[in-house]
Amino acid sequence: MDCDVLIIGGGPAGLSVASHLPKHLRSIVVHQDKEIGVPVRTSGVSWLADCKALNLPENTYHPIYQADVYSDNESAHFAIKHHTVVALDVTGTYRHLAQLSDHPNRRLLLNSKFTDVTRQSDGSFRAELRTPEGPKQITARYIVDASGWHCAVLERLGLNTAPTRRAVGIEFEYPLQEMDPHRVVIFFGKHALSAYGWALPTREGTVRLGIGIIQPDNSVSPKKLMQQFLDSDAPERMNLPRPVDYHVNAGILPAQAYEKKLVYGRVIRVGDSANMATPTLGEGIRTAISSGRALGTALGKACETASDRPLAAYETACTRLYARNYNFGFMTNQRAAAYGPEDWDRAVRRISHLDEATLAAAFRSEFSPGMIARTTLKTALRKFKNG
Image 1 (spheres, rainbow, N blue to C red):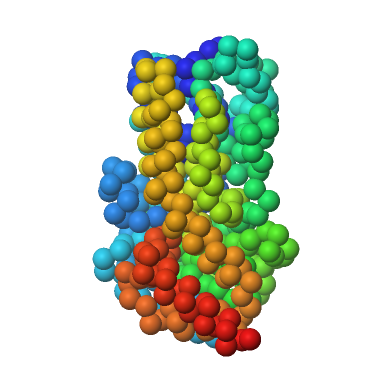
Image 2 (image 1 turned 180 degrees about the vertical axis):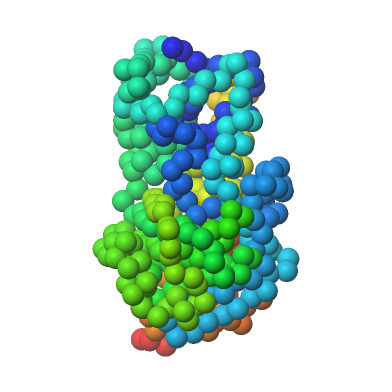
Protein backbone atom coordinates (compact mmCIF):
# COMPACT_ATOMS: atom_id res chain seq x y z
CA MET A 1 0.00 0.00 0.00
CA ASP A 2 1.11 3.56 -0.58
CA CYS A 3 -0.30 6.98 0.28
CA ASP A 4 0.52 10.67 0.42
CA VAL A 5 0.06 11.00 4.19
CA LEU A 6 0.33 8.19 6.73
CA ILE A 7 -1.16 9.00 10.15
CA ILE A 8 -0.16 6.84 13.10
CA GLY A 9 -2.90 7.17 15.68
CA GLY A 10 -6.70 7.32 15.39
CA GLY A 11 -7.38 9.66 18.30
CA PRO A 12 -8.72 13.21 17.96
CA ALA A 13 -5.43 14.61 16.62
CA GLY A 14 -4.87 12.00 13.92
CA LEU A 15 -8.52 11.94 12.84
CA SER A 16 -8.57 15.73 12.64
CA VAL A 17 -5.48 15.76 10.42
CA ALA A 18 -7.22 13.32 8.06
CA SER A 19 -10.42 15.40 7.98
CA HIS A 20 -8.62 18.52 6.74
CA LEU A 21 -6.46 16.97 4.05
CA PRO A 22 -7.63 17.68 0.51
CA LYS A 23 -9.78 14.76 -0.61
CA HIS A 24 -7.68 14.03 -3.66
CA LEU A 25 -4.73 13.13 -1.43
CA ARG A 26 -4.48 9.52 -0.36
CA SER A 27 -4.27 9.08 3.39
CA ILE A 28 -4.12 6.10 5.73
CA VAL A 29 -4.95 6.26 9.45
CA VAL A 30 -3.51 3.45 11.58
CA HIS A 31 -5.39 2.83 14.84
CA GLN A 32 -4.35 0.16 17.33
CA ASP A 33 -7.81 -0.42 18.85
CA LYS A 34 -10.63 -2.46 17.32
CA GLU A 35 -13.01 0.51 17.42
CA ILE A 36 -12.73 4.29 17.29
CA GLY A 37 -13.15 5.79 20.77
CA VAL A 38 -13.13 2.45 22.62
CA PRO A 39 -11.69 1.95 25.18
CA VAL A 40 -11.99 5.42 26.72
CA ARG A 41 -8.65 6.81 27.93
CA THR A 42 -9.67 10.32 28.99
CA SER A 43 -12.25 11.93 31.25
CA GLY A 44 -13.37 14.15 28.36
CA VAL A 45 -13.54 17.51 30.14
CA SER A 46 -13.63 20.50 27.81
CA TRP A 47 -15.35 23.88 27.32
CA LEU A 48 -18.61 24.82 25.66
CA ALA A 49 -17.13 27.71 23.67
CA ASP A 50 -14.50 25.41 22.15
CA CYS A 51 -17.05 22.72 21.27
CA LYS A 52 -19.12 25.30 19.41
CA ALA A 53 -16.08 26.79 17.68
CA LEU A 54 -15.03 23.29 16.57
CA ASN A 55 -18.59 22.55 15.34
CA LEU A 56 -18.98 19.45 17.49
CA PRO A 57 -22.56 18.12 17.52
CA GLU A 58 -24.61 19.12 20.56
CA ASN A 59 -25.22 15.48 21.41
CA THR A 60 -21.49 14.97 22.05
CA TYR A 61 -21.20 17.23 25.11
CA HIS A 62 -22.92 17.83 28.44
CA PRO A 63 -22.84 21.26 30.19
CA ILE A 64 -21.64 21.83 33.77
CA TYR A 65 -22.93 24.80 35.80
CA GLN A 66 -21.37 24.24 39.23
CA ALA A 67 -17.72 23.61 40.18
CA ASP A 68 -16.67 22.56 43.69
CA VAL A 69 -12.98 22.43 44.60
CA TYR A 70 -11.79 20.54 47.70
CA SER A 71 -8.60 19.94 49.64
CA ASP A 72 -8.46 17.85 52.80
CA ASN A 73 -9.82 20.64 55.01
CA GLU A 74 -10.96 23.45 52.72
CA SER A 75 -13.38 23.96 49.86
CA ALA A 76 -14.28 26.53 47.22
CA HIS A 77 -17.55 26.71 45.29
CA PHE A 78 -18.30 28.42 41.98
CA ALA A 79 -21.44 28.95 39.95
CA ILE A 80 -20.41 28.69 36.30
CA LYS A 81 -22.18 31.41 34.34
CA HIS A 82 -19.90 32.50 31.51
CA HIS A 83 -17.14 29.87 31.04
CA THR A 84 -19.20 26.71 30.78
CA VAL A 85 -17.38 23.44 31.30
CA VAL A 86 -18.59 20.36 29.42
CA ALA A 87 -18.17 16.61 29.70
CA LEU A 88 -17.60 15.11 26.27
CA ASP A 89 -19.08 11.87 25.06
CA VAL A 90 -15.58 10.68 24.21
CA THR A 91 -16.58 7.77 22.00
CA GLY A 92 -19.23 9.82 20.20
CA THR A 93 -16.82 12.72 19.66
CA TYR A 94 -14.09 10.49 18.22
CA ARG A 95 -16.55 8.77 15.90
CA HIS A 96 -17.84 12.12 14.69
CA LEU A 97 -14.26 13.14 13.90
CA ALA A 98 -13.73 9.89 12.00
CA GLN A 99 -16.83 10.50 9.90
CA LEU A 100 -15.52 13.91 8.82
CA SER A 101 -12.71 12.27 6.86
CA ASP A 102 -14.71 9.31 5.53
CA HIS A 103 -14.12 9.40 1.77
CA PRO A 104 -12.67 6.99 -0.83
CA ASN A 105 -9.10 8.32 -0.60
CA ARG A 106 -8.90 7.87 3.19
CA ARG A 107 -8.31 4.38 4.53
CA LEU A 108 -8.79 3.56 8.22
CA LEU A 109 -6.90 0.51 9.50
CA LEU A 110 -8.34 -0.64 12.83
CA ASN A 111 -6.79 -3.17 15.22
CA SER A 112 -3.44 -2.48 13.54
CA LYS A 113 -0.21 -1.76 15.38
CA PHE A 114 2.61 0.37 14.03
CA THR A 115 5.90 -1.46 14.68
CA ASP A 116 8.65 0.23 12.65
CA VAL A 117 9.48 2.80 9.99
CA THR A 118 12.46 3.48 7.75
CA ARG A 119 13.34 6.42 5.54
CA GLN A 120 13.82 5.50 1.89
CA SER A 121 16.50 6.91 -0.45
CA ASP A 122 13.90 8.99 -2.30
CA GLY A 123 12.78 10.68 0.95
CA SER A 124 9.61 8.64 1.40
CA PHE A 125 8.91 6.37 4.38
CA ARG A 126 8.14 2.69 4.64
CA ALA A 127 6.15 1.75 7.73
CA GLU A 128 5.71 -1.74 9.13
CA LEU A 129 2.37 -2.75 10.62
CA ARG A 130 1.00 -5.77 12.45
CA THR A 131 -2.62 -6.31 11.39
CA PRO A 132 -5.22 -9.06 11.85
CA GLU A 133 -4.42 -10.20 8.30
CA GLY A 134 -0.69 -10.34 9.02
CA PRO A 135 2.26 -7.95 8.49
CA LYS A 136 1.76 -5.04 6.11
CA GLN A 137 4.00 -2.36 4.66
CA ILE A 138 2.93 1.16 3.75
CA THR A 139 4.94 3.67 1.75
CA ALA A 140 4.15 7.35 2.37
CA ARG A 141 5.41 10.79 1.32
CA TYR A 142 4.65 12.29 4.76
CA ILE A 143 4.11 10.65 8.11
CA VAL A 144 2.24 12.11 11.11
CA ASP A 145 3.02 10.95 14.63
CA ALA A 146 -0.32 11.10 16.43
CA SER A 147 0.49 8.04 18.54
CA GLY A 148 0.05 9.82 21.88
CA TRP A 149 2.64 9.89 24.65
CA HIS A 150 4.43 6.92 23.07
CA CYS A 151 5.89 9.17 20.31
CA ALA A 152 6.19 5.90 18.41
CA VAL A 153 7.25 7.29 15.03
CA LEU A 154 9.75 9.78 16.44
CA GLU A 155 11.31 7.09 18.63
CA ARG A 156 11.71 4.65 15.74
CA LEU A 157 13.33 7.29 13.54
CA GLY A 158 15.58 8.53 16.36
CA LEU A 159 14.10 12.03 16.18
CA ASN A 160 12.82 12.30 19.76
CA THR A 161 11.92 10.14 22.74
CA ALA A 162 8.80 9.40 24.77
CA PRO A 163 8.39 11.70 27.80
CA THR A 164 9.78 10.47 31.10
CA ARG A 165 7.39 12.65 33.11
CA ARG A 166 3.80 11.51 32.60
CA ALA A 167 0.35 11.99 34.07
CA VAL A 168 -1.23 8.61 34.82
CA GLY A 169 -4.91 8.38 35.70
CA ILE A 170 -7.57 5.84 36.61
CA GLU A 171 -11.30 6.48 36.44
CA PHE A 172 -14.38 4.62 37.66
CA GLU A 173 -17.50 5.30 35.58
CA TYR A 174 -20.82 4.35 37.15
CA PRO A 175 -24.47 5.51 37.54
CA LEU A 176 -24.89 9.10 38.68
CA GLN A 177 -27.47 8.20 41.37
CA GLU A 178 -28.36 11.32 43.39
CA MET A 179 -25.49 13.54 42.26
CA ASP A 180 -26.32 16.85 40.57
CA PRO A 181 -25.95 16.09 36.83
CA HIS A 182 -24.47 19.55 36.15
CA ARG A 183 -21.85 19.68 38.94
CA VAL A 184 -18.14 18.90 38.65
CA VAL A 185 -15.88 18.20 41.63
CA ILE A 186 -12.10 18.65 41.67
CA PHE A 187 -10.08 17.59 44.70
CA PHE A 188 -6.49 17.92 45.84
CA GLY A 189 -4.52 16.77 48.85
CA LYS A 190 -3.61 13.42 50.38
CA HIS A 191 -5.84 11.43 48.01
CA ALA A 192 -4.27 12.89 44.87
CA LEU A 193 -0.81 14.19 45.73
CA SER A 194 1.19 15.52 42.73
CA ALA A 195 -1.97 15.93 40.61
CA TYR A 196 -5.71 15.95 41.32
CA GLY A 197 -8.93 13.96 41.43
CA TRP A 198 -12.24 14.65 39.73
CA ALA A 199 -15.89 13.66 39.50
CA LEU A 200 -17.47 14.57 36.17
CA PRO A 201 -21.12 13.83 35.26
CA THR A 202 -21.97 12.80 31.70
CA ARG A 203 -25.01 13.12 29.45
CA GLU A 204 -25.35 9.30 29.62
CA GLY A 205 -26.36 9.54 33.30
CA THR A 206 -23.02 8.38 34.70
CA VAL A 207 -20.27 10.01 36.71
CA ARG A 208 -16.55 9.60 36.01
CA LEU A 209 -14.68 9.50 39.31
CA GLY A 210 -10.95 9.66 38.68
CA ILE A 211 -7.58 10.22 40.31
CA GLY A 212 -4.34 11.08 38.54
CA ILE A 213 -0.71 11.31 39.57
CA ILE A 214 2.48 12.62 38.00
CA GLN A 215 5.22 10.06 37.53
CA PRO A 216 7.99 10.00 38.67
CA ASP A 217 7.03 12.82 41.09
CA ASN A 218 4.72 10.32 42.79
CA SER A 219 5.32 6.56 42.87
CA VAL A 220 1.98 5.54 44.40
CA SER A 221 -0.37 3.92 41.88
CA PRO A 222 -3.63 5.74 41.05
CA LYS A 223 -5.46 2.48 41.76
CA LYS A 224 -4.18 2.46 45.36
CA LEU A 225 -5.05 6.13 45.81
CA MET A 226 -8.55 5.47 44.51
CA GLN A 227 -9.04 2.67 47.02
CA GLN A 228 -7.79 4.89 49.86
CA PHE A 229 -10.18 7.63 48.73
CA LEU A 230 -13.13 5.24 48.71
CA ASP A 231 -12.15 3.82 52.11
CA SER A 232 -12.30 7.33 53.61
CA ASP A 233 -15.24 9.61 54.35
CA ALA A 234 -14.18 12.01 51.55
CA PRO A 235 -16.94 10.96 49.10
CA GLU A 236 -19.60 11.87 51.67
CA ARG A 237 -17.88 15.17 52.47
CA MET A 238 -17.87 16.02 48.75
CA ASN A 239 -21.42 14.73 48.30
CA LEU A 240 -20.33 12.10 45.77
CA PRO A 241 -22.11 8.80 45.13
CA ARG A 242 -20.11 5.65 45.75
CA PRO A 243 -19.29 3.38 42.81
CA VAL A 244 -21.77 0.67 41.84
CA ASP A 245 -21.70 -1.40 38.65
CA TYR A 246 -18.66 0.55 37.50
CA HIS A 247 -16.20 0.03 34.69
CA VAL A 248 -12.64 1.34 34.60
CA ASN A 249 -11.11 3.87 32.21
CA ALA A 250 -7.38 4.59 32.32
CA GLY A 251 -4.97 6.80 30.41
CA ILE A 252 -1.54 8.41 30.21
CA LEU A 253 -0.59 11.93 29.12
CA PRO A 254 2.78 13.65 28.73
CA ALA A 255 3.53 16.05 31.61
CA GLN A 256 6.50 17.91 30.18
CA ALA A 257 7.22 21.41 28.99
CA TYR A 258 6.01 22.42 25.54
CA GLU A 259 8.57 21.78 22.81
CA LYS A 260 8.61 24.08 19.80
CA LYS A 261 10.02 21.43 17.46
CA LEU A 262 7.04 19.80 15.73
CA VAL A 263 8.28 19.36 12.16
CA TYR A 264 11.16 17.05 11.29
CA GLY A 265 11.27 17.38 7.53
CA ARG A 266 8.38 15.21 6.37
CA VAL A 267 7.66 13.81 9.82
CA ILE A 268 5.31 15.90 11.97
CA ARG A 269 3.98 15.30 15.46
CA VAL A 270 0.65 16.48 16.82
CA GLY A 271 -1.60 16.07 19.87
CA ASP A 272 -0.16 14.24 22.86
CA SER A 273 2.93 13.32 20.82
CA ALA A 274 3.60 17.07 20.80
CA ASN A 275 2.80 17.70 24.51
CA MET A 276 -0.35 19.63 23.59
CA ALA A 277 -2.49 18.65 26.59
CA THR A 278 -2.84 21.60 28.97
CA PRO A 279 -0.30 21.33 31.83
CA THR A 280 -2.82 22.43 34.46
CA LEU A 281 -5.85 20.16 33.96
CA GLY A 282 -4.31 17.87 31.35
CA GLU A 283 -7.25 18.30 28.96
CA GLY A 284 -6.14 17.98 25.39
CA ILE A 285 -9.03 17.01 23.12
CA ARG A 286 -9.85 20.56 22.01
CA THR A 287 -6.22 21.37 21.23
CA ALA A 288 -5.76 18.00 19.51
CA ILE A 289 -8.70 18.76 17.20
CA SER A 290 -7.74 22.35 16.40
CA SER A 291 -4.02 21.63 15.89
CA GLY A 292 -4.83 18.48 13.92
CA ARG A 293 -7.08 20.41 11.56
CA ALA A 294 -4.43 23.10 11.11
CA LEU A 295 -1.83 20.43 10.34
CA GLY A 296 -4.11 18.75 7.80
CA THR A 297 -4.53 22.06 5.98
CA ALA A 298 -0.77 22.72 6.08
CA LEU A 299 0.02 19.22 4.81
CA GLY A 300 -2.38 19.69 1.92
CA LYS A 301 -0.55 22.86 0.88
CA ALA A 302 2.85 21.19 1.33
CA CYS A 303 1.85 18.27 -0.89
CA GLU A 304 0.40 20.53 -3.58
CA THR A 305 3.30 23.00 -3.67
CA ALA A 306 6.18 20.63 -2.84
CA SER A 307 7.30 23.28 -0.35
CA ASP A 308 8.31 23.09 3.31
CA ARG A 309 6.92 26.55 4.02
CA PRO A 310 3.35 25.54 4.98
CA LEU A 311 4.68 23.14 7.64
CA ALA A 312 7.13 25.73 8.94
CA ALA A 313 4.24 28.19 9.23
CA TYR A 314 2.21 25.55 11.12
CA GLU A 315 5.03 25.06 13.61
CA THR A 316 5.40 28.82 14.12
CA ALA A 317 1.65 29.24 14.64
CA CYS A 318 1.62 26.49 17.30
CA THR A 319 4.52 28.13 19.11
CA ARG A 320 2.64 31.42 19.16
CA LEU A 321 -0.50 29.72 20.49
CA TYR A 322 0.96 27.42 23.11
CA ALA A 323 4.59 28.03 24.08
CA ARG A 324 4.32 30.89 26.59
CA ASN A 325 1.12 29.72 28.27
CA TYR A 326 2.13 26.07 28.39
CA ASN A 327 5.63 26.69 29.69
CA PHE A 328 4.29 28.88 32.49
CA GLY A 329 1.60 26.29 33.16
CA PHE A 330 4.28 23.60 33.30
CA MET A 331 6.20 25.55 35.95
CA THR A 332 2.97 25.83 37.91
CA ASN A 333 2.40 22.10 37.46
CA GLN A 334 5.89 21.28 38.76
CA ARG A 335 5.43 23.48 41.82
CA ALA A 336 2.00 22.03 42.59
CA ALA A 337 3.27 18.47 42.19
CA ALA A 338 5.49 19.06 45.23
CA TYR A 339 2.63 20.33 47.42
CA GLY A 340 1.68 18.55 50.61
CA PRO A 341 -1.83 18.49 52.17
CA GLU A 342 -1.26 21.76 54.07
CA ASP A 343 -0.06 23.47 50.90
CA TRP A 344 -3.24 22.39 49.16
CA ASP A 345 -5.39 23.72 52.01
CA ARG A 346 -3.75 27.13 51.55
CA ALA A 347 -4.10 26.89 47.77
CA VAL A 348 -7.83 26.13 47.93
CA ARG A 349 -8.33 29.05 50.32
CA ARG A 350 -6.68 31.27 47.70
CA ILE A 351 -8.78 29.70 44.93
CA SER A 352 -11.95 30.55 46.85
CA HIS A 353 -11.20 34.26 46.33
CA LEU A 354 -10.81 34.00 42.55
CA ASP A 355 -13.48 35.09 40.12
CA GLU A 356 -14.85 32.73 37.51
CA ALA A 357 -12.84 34.20 34.62
CA THR A 358 -9.49 33.94 36.45
CA LEU A 359 -10.17 30.37 37.55
CA ALA A 360 -11.16 29.36 34.03
CA ALA A 361 -8.02 30.98 32.58
CA ALA A 362 -5.80 29.12 35.05
CA PHE A 363 -7.47 25.79 34.35
CA ARG A 364 -7.20 26.41 30.58
CA SER A 365 -3.50 27.33 30.88
CA GLU A 366 -4.15 30.80 29.51
CA PHE A 367 -1.83 33.13 31.38
CA SER A 368 -1.76 36.80 30.46
CA PRO A 369 1.52 38.71 30.89
CA GLY A 370 -0.02 40.51 33.90
CA MET A 371 -1.02 37.23 35.56
CA ILE A 372 2.45 35.80 34.95
CA ALA A 373 4.11 38.92 36.40
CA ARG A 374 1.94 38.85 39.53
CA THR A 375 2.50 35.14 40.09
CA THR A 376 6.26 35.44 39.56
CA LEU A 377 6.44 38.32 42.02
CA LYS A 378 4.49 36.41 44.65
CA THR A 379 6.79 33.40 44.23
CA ALA A 380 9.89 35.56 44.58
CA LEU A 381 8.52 37.25 47.71
CA ARG A 382 7.65 33.91 49.26
CA LYS A 383 11.17 32.59 48.60
CA PHE A 384 12.65 35.80 50.07
CA LYS A 385 10.55 35.49 53.23
CA ASN A 386 11.55 31.86 53.64
CA GLY A 387 15.19 32.85 53.49
